[in-house]
Length: 226
Image (cartoon, rainbow, N blue to C red; front, side, top):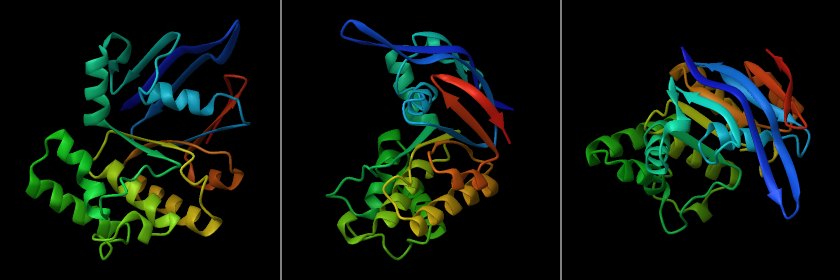
């Protein structure tokens, strides 16, 4: 089953009088259950591509289909609903709400989605047990290590079983040991849940976790290996 299909996607930013071509025509297909890494040098277009695929920005031209739905025809309201209901996101800065404890940070998005309380409390407990934080539910974010905070962010992203999980350099602020713990978790989720994951990375050793690697250079995919 195809989860992501793009054709000739471009993105041009206007920086004063200068046009910056961040993407120059990206065509790619990603299937259900794939763990795909997007790699390349700084400025190659990695995060821009992830933002296009994750509906966090709009392409200048080209088409994107997620789960068979042409995203280009959706209104801003429909795009926001699609993101909320069907996609999950993990970023390098964790983005936890400091006033909320671990449990509350995980089920916050489920509340917004309208999930029943008994359901989101149960699913939150299950996912926190899976990531090894079942005994830390009442802790605040400043009582956790960076690696633990990132695991909470992952739990929040996957608690409602998104169709696609997007991760933008989730290990950038972590040491090697914590990074490996996070990547092991991603791989476990990928294999046990057949979770489709698209992750931006700049670390060569991360390749051992990916099923495929899309290498970008100057806004183009120059290699698709796996």
